[in-house]
Length: 509
Image 1 (cartoon, rainbow, N blue to C red):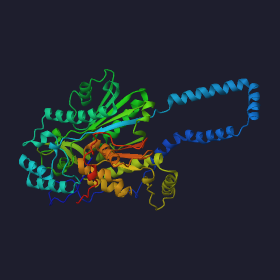
Image 2: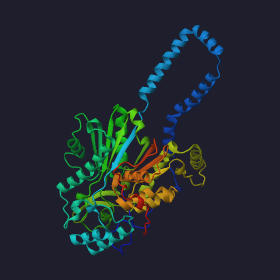
Image 3: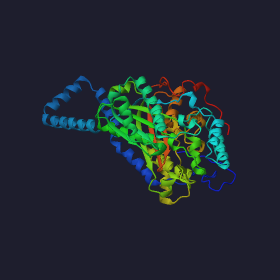
C-alpha cells in the first residue's frame, strides 16, 4: 500500500489529493473492537490467576519443617482414596493443558534480498527512461517527477532488469527471471546462515500479490530446492502489501498442527509485468514508489530452536475492511480508458487506512498495553458510551508496549501520519524512513528490511518487543508482535551490511 500527494498543475484526472490524511484517532474508537481485545485477554485469565496461587504454595512449602512434613504424610495415609483421586485429576488436567496449549513459534532467522548494483535507478535515469519509452505525455512526466522528489526514496533503489531496457521488456520470461533472482537470492542466504537443509522444511508459504504464474511460485521453490514430497505449500496472491503478516499467521497456524518442523515464509512483489504505461495519474504512483525486494523467514516450533532463535512470535492481529465497497476498491487493479493495466489508488485511501489502523490497534491494545494504559483507555470508552460525554477517547501510549516499530514503508505520507497519530518519536520511525530511502516500497517484505535496520544499528536487546504493522489492498491492516530472545546481531550478508554506517540520512523534501 502506498500513497503520495502532489500538486500537478491542475490535471483533471488526478485521484490523489494533498489534503487527504489519516483521520484523527482521538475522534472515535469503536467499542466492539476493544471488547474483542479484552476477550482475548480474559481467555488467558486462568493462567494469570494460577501464577500467584503457585507462588503462594511455594512460599508455604518453604516454611514447613520436618515435623510438619511428617504430620502431613500421616494424614495422607489415612486419606488414600482422596490422594489417588486428586493425583488422577492433576495428571489428567496437566495432560490436557500440555496437549492443547499453543505451541511457541520461534523466528530462527530471516534474509532480505539485495539486488546487484547495476539495477540501481537514480531519479534522472528513471525520468530519462520514462521519457524515452514514448508512453507518457508531458503532464504525466511532470507528475512522476514531483512524486519522486517528494517520495522519500533515495538514489540507490532497484528496478528489475527488464525495466532498464529501452523500450522495457515486460515479458513472462523476464518476470519469472525477476522472481527467481529475488526469491532464490533470499532463500540461498537464509539456508546458508541457518545451516538448515531444504529437505527439513515441512511448511512453505509464499506471497506475491500481482505475479501468480502456473506453476506457482511455491512450486518453483519446491522444484529449485528439491523439497520433500509431503511439504505443505501455499501460494497467496492478490493480498497486497500486508500479505507478509498474513503469511506469518498462516505459517503459525500450520505450526500448531504439525509438530517438530520448520516453516519458510517468502514475501515479495514482482514489478516486471506490473509497470503502468499509461497517463492516468492515480495509476502512475506505484511506478514511482515500488522497487525490487523480497524476504525469506525461517520459523520453527522445535523447543530446541529457542536457544538460537532471534525472536518469539507473541501476537498476530488482522483487520479486514473488505465488506465496505470504498475500502474494497481503494487499491484496485484495472485497465484505464485505453486498455492499459495498472493499480489505481483512490482519493479515499488515507482515510480508509486510518479506519483500518484504528480498528487494528483497538483490538491489539488490550493484548500488549500495561494495565495503567488499558484502564485509562477503557474508562474513556465507557464514559463516552454510557454518558455520551463529550470527551475524546484516550489514545494509549504504544511506546510503553513496544521498543521498536516496523511500519510498512508504503510512502512518506503513511509514515508521517502514523508518527503523528501514534505520537511516536523520530527514532521510532527511523527504520521505516531509511528503508523507504534505501530500498523504496518493497511491498510485503518492507517490514523485514526495517527489522534488519534495527538489528544492524545494534539496538535490539533481549526482551525487546517489536511491532510490525502493514497495510494492503482489500483493505487490510495487520500487526505482528515479536519478542527478542537475545541481544540480536545482524546476520551475515544482510541488506544493510555495506551501508549502515551512512544511515540515518537527512531527507530533504
